[in-house]
Length: 375
Image (cartoon, rainbow, N blue to C red; front, top):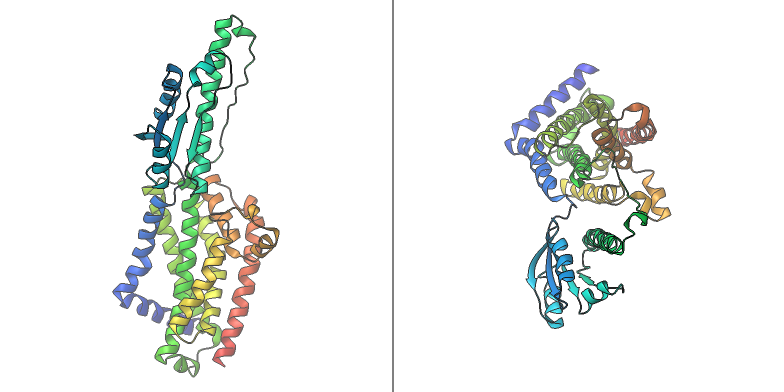
């Protein structure tokens, strides 16, 4: 049994590496993708093009603007003089934020009255607008606190003013770098896509060139053919995840706090699902074009419902029920926890168990359908 499966396995490896373009797609393409995604999958906002509209022009308004522009976020690119210019720079997308201080701001502060400023945001990208708003609130809170402290000190009762100091600490990702969170997820998406595509394409290719009929009349048993067909892509997927993990750690300095062997072990369990689904797609597809379309139709909802970009807890309850059957949901938690938290099977077994169940069910059903197709 194993000799015949080994023969198919060797044939598959020879067929894969015979084509130089295929070797590029398998090994170079994932590395290029991880580099591109590593630089682009970043929600840290460090540059906010800003327009300044100071109608007050007092020492108080200039001090507040200095706090904005001396921060590492708000970069003054334009100074505007009237309301028409404010509408123009926002409508044209020349700036992201307009800081407007009306007349009377300094006078109201000195007179212990409410002093207002206006921050106009480009809300086209709501996520960026919310982050920028958070930066602005932090700067305003600091300015307000110091202004009140100065007034209290001038009044002679500084020591009687109580202060509450908040000290925050972020575990696992101390600097809150979004790349550290997203890049492990990118690794999961790349491995998913490559394993699906390779499995579906290889078997459909046999149908297109007419060699599948030769395999069906050979002494090969269906199980031997399945093992010989799937094992090369499992090995290739493990090599891919090792290479892109190495690149992520060395190039982007993503922390890998967990055990690399546990990561590979978890990937093996996850590959049960992706290889099984690729095998299933190959049984329902007659051409490589059909297989490509089927992979795409499966892949996009799988990524969107995995928690890669959007928290599952924020989705409608019905959609959350659907994610229970999504294997990438569990693998996304596993790979991020291994990278950032450094935990092992004692913590991640609630994710591994359903992933293993889904994998066994999928590979079993796909194998039965494949056997039926051979017969």
